[in-house]
Length: 134
Image (cartoon, rainbow, N blue to C red):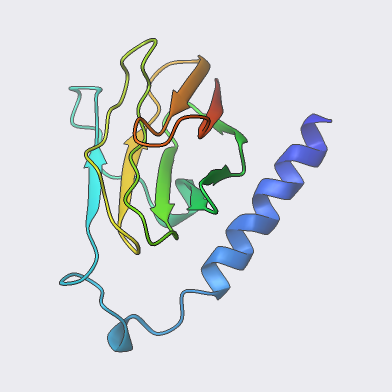
């Protein structure tokens, strides 16, 4: 099951990378807001693209709903809906984004292993689970 999930996440990452297109013709910095939250306090630097797991927000759902990342990997939520969303860990408080609009994103770098349940506080029933492994 774990291998299947890893393969699925790898496929999603490949598809997302292939769908990016040429950044010069899209709104790279002026129309897109990427917010990165690093809660380590260690100044370990930004994660590279290969260390990022993307979760889409579309049809008022997190896709995939359940994701697995390793400590040190970055999770990037991308809003694909016309309505604003947020991503908030209400139980452990490891991350809380501001609301962001279609095409914008929010990033969080996982610092410790465990299971994180998160929600969009704007839309009841829009929830997901992030499993962080060592």
